[in-house]
Each structure stands twice: as structure tokens, then as C-alpha cells.
Image 1 (cartoon, rainbow over the protein chains, first blue to last red):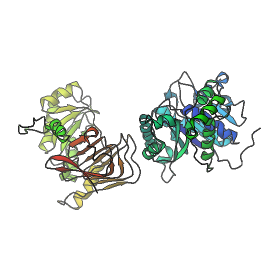
Image 2 (cartoon, one colour):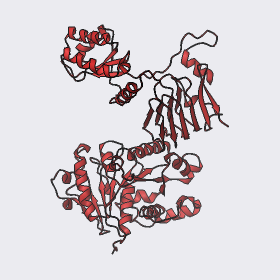
Image 3 (cartoon, rainbow over the protein chains, first blue to last red):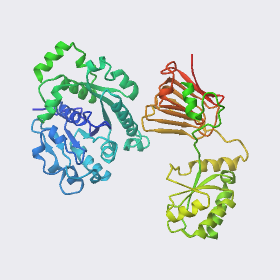
Image 4 (cartoon, rainbow over the protein chains, first blue to last red):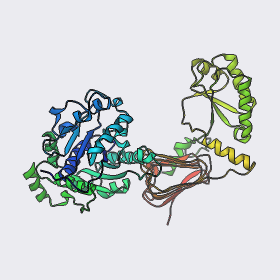
Amino acid sequence: MTQTNDNAPMGRIIVITSGKGGVGKTTSAAAISAGLAKQGYKTVVIDFDVGLRNLDMIMGCERRVVFDFINVIQGDAKLKQALIKDKRLENLAVLPTSQTRDKDALTREGVEAVLNELKQDYDYIVCDSPAGIERGAHLAMYFADEAVVVTNPEVSSVRDSDRVLGLLSSKTKRAETEGAEPIKAQVLLTRHDQGRIDKGEMMTVEDVLEILAVPLLGIIPESQAVLRASNTGTPVTLDDPSAAGRAYEDAVARLTGEDVEMRVASDRRPGLLQRMFGRTA
Amino acid sequence: MQQRATERRGGRSLVAPRSFQVRGRFLTAIALRLENETPDEAFFDALDSHVQLTPKFFYEAPLVVDFEKVPGLVDEAALRDLIGELRKRKLMVFAAQNANAAQREVALAMGLVAIGGGREAPLPSEKSDRGRRVDAPGKAPKTENLVITEPVRSGQMIVAERGDLTVIGSVASGAELVAAGSIHVYGTLRGRAMAGVHGDETARIFCQKLDAELVAIAGLYRTNENIEDAHRNARVQVFLDKERLRMETLG
């Protein structure tokens, strides 16, 4: 059903991170990895949030988890045993994490070995980082080639994203390797709500970008479709068409190097938006 | 606004003459980390030869004795002897860190204060000092300016230990700039900026857009809520004028 993409990178590692919790990292990781797979790239998405296993639910494969990332790191299972193939897209796989262990079970060597093995088979390796800046988040970003910093248009989220951008440029393998190109970091603005911005309750896109000073990957509107997709275990890019789904698809296209004009779905007239939501939600 | 800041500093009423100021102070100290539980002749010989390498660096230098590696060094006579010997060498021993209860008792009796672990640097300053002072004894300390060409992110701390600090880019809220000299920010200053931390009252802070959490010069500070509206988000220089922190919009 999906064609393999010819200009595929060789195992490019993308970390989805934010610092702050609840901004939409896992939702974005699911949507972006599904979007990449839809475009024909062999994609695997890894849950780094040890102890708070969520990605498998958002991806709709929680009933199929037998072995996990930690089992692989500790040598209790083979990587192929732990990878769960997506039922909708054959070139998409999920590496779930453990719900019973804690983040100390992650080791840098173990993570590196798993990533190196995945690089042999996959075009994109998407790492879903836990919130915070501790071990799990650090290891999720450490080997990354590229970073998507998920940010909500509000001050605390922006400040945490800024902190994470600082860590990306100092505490990662690329940062520590002399002469290596730095991690390419981009901001993904989620839960964008033009109505609340107009009322002054949220920061504008310009304000956020002025503070973070990195390129914008996309603007995802606040949408019922996102919540619904999460609850049904469907990445929003695989669900029925929605403003959020389209925004994620645009972001994915930009990630793969396409030049897509920045659209703000909620910039449209409220009437149209309402009708659109009425249809999809 | 200004008055409020002044009151907070000195606690003075508006009419009575000011009798004191409370000022922040950064102090650079040498930490002597003991690794030998029985400081003997050989220990002091080694110390002497080390001090001889850079006598000026150690002369009257504030010194903290670190007991982390020597929990067994609790003999009162030995401790008194050690501190006495250090003082004989014009080392200004004033504090003990990582001391256990027994060590702390002797330290307090000898007029030392017990301090918690501070931030420690692994002696880069001593090294550069050594090179410089040996080469050119008696010359004024060389300034080392620091230029940062990237935005300073929240949680980062940039220190220009002996010179000016220039940032080409913005300084985020939650970031910290520290300089012995002046601080220049070609961008928005939203974090904290402390200039003249070793007491240089001629140090200034310049920024293209001021929304700092805190600005300080030689320990005199002002927080964001005390920035006047006229200066907020403006191009501003901050400087000391007769022991007062002043802000001025740049044209």
C-alpha cells in the first residue's frame, strides 16, 4: 500500500522533546512518525518515558506489547521481538517502553546499541522524550540528529523549551563531538488557539519565535480531533482529515526537506472553522 | 521607584542619614582539598613548593579547607596545627567545607565558618594566573573578554571572570550573565545580568531591549518590578552614579 521513498535518509534520529509536560510530545511523536511512514519512509518511534508508558496507547498497539525497550537494553529480548509493526502502515513500527521499571534502567550504551541497530533498517527513528530534563529526556536527545521542540504558546512552556534548546546545544553527542554539525532544532507550536491569542491569553507565534530564536516547524491548532484521535489510539495524521492532521502533515513535509508554506488553520473565519470541526469531531 | 529600591538596600528612613548598605558580594576563594589524613612535614613541603610557583596567587588569598576526602582527620591538635601552619603562610583560612561534626567543632573554635558545598571550578584561573604572573610579575591583571554569538538559553550561566561579556543574541528568562567588567547584550535581556562582580563600580550593562529579571552592578541590584516603564523594553544602559543604580535610555 505504501511506496518506499527513494530519497530516504539513513537512520536519521529525531527527538521530540519539550521540557514541560502535557504540551503534546507523545501526540506529536505519534503524528509525525505516522506522517513519515505515510510518505513512504521506514519509520520507528521509540518511547523513552520509562515507567509512564503512553506512546503505545496513542499508537493503538497497547494490547500487543510483549517485550519492551528496557528488555532489549538489558538483553532479555531481541530488538525484533520488541518492535511492534503497525497494522495500518507496514513501514511503521513502535518500540514501547516499560511501565514497571524506572529511568535508571536506561543506559547510554544500551540506548546507543539499540539506535545503531535500528539505523540499519529504518529511515527515521523518532524518539519520544519524557518531560523534564533528567536521565530519560537526556538519553532521548543525546544521540539525536534533529530535534522537534514541542511548545505551547504560553510563558512557562516557552521558558522550558528554551532550557531544552540550551541542553540540545551543549549536552548531546553532536554538541560534544568536535567538528560535528549541531543538532537541527525546530519549534513545533501546539495547542495554538487564535481566539485566545486575540484575547491576550496566549503568546503570539512571533513572540514565541523571538524568544526561542530557532526555525518554526509548524503550528498545530488546538483541536478536538487531537483528543479524539488519542483516545481511539489513532495518530492524528492517520485519522479522518482534520485541521490538526493537516498541520502535522505540513510539519512532516518540512521535516523531510519540502518547502511548505506556513498555514495557520485557525486563521480562517470562525464560521468555517466551526463547520470544519463540526464535520470531523 | 528609586526610593523604594534605596530603602530596601539600606533600610533607612527618608530623613535619617544612612548608616549602612546591604550589598551582594561575590567572593572568589581558593579551596584546599585535603587528600592526606595526616598532614606531616612532607605535606607542608609540597604545599610550600606549590605556593612558591605562584606566590602572588596565594598571598593573602581567601582559602576554604575542604575535608571531603579526609573524614578521619579529627584529631584536635593536628587540625589546630594544620590551620595554624596555613595561616603562617599568609593564607587567609576562613572556612571549612564538607567538614564532619568533629572537624566542624575545631574549625568553629579556630574562628572558621562551616560552609556548604559551593560551586567549584577545577582551577583554570590558577593555571592562567600561573602563566601570567610568572611571565610578567607585578603587571596589572590582564583582562579576558568573552563574546558569545548565540542566544543564551534559560538555565545557562555565562561568566566572564576577568573582563567584559558581550552577547550577540538574546538572553532568556532564567539565564544568568556574570562579568567582572561590563555586560553588552545585542538582543533582548530577559534573564539576570550582574556586572562588576568583583566590585568594579565603573562597570555598566548595555542592552538593546531591557526586560531583565535582575540587573546588578558591583552588588547593587534592581529587580524587574523596579524597572521604570520608560526603560522597559527600551535600549538602556545601567550604571552606578554615586552609589546608586541608574538606568538611562540610549538614543
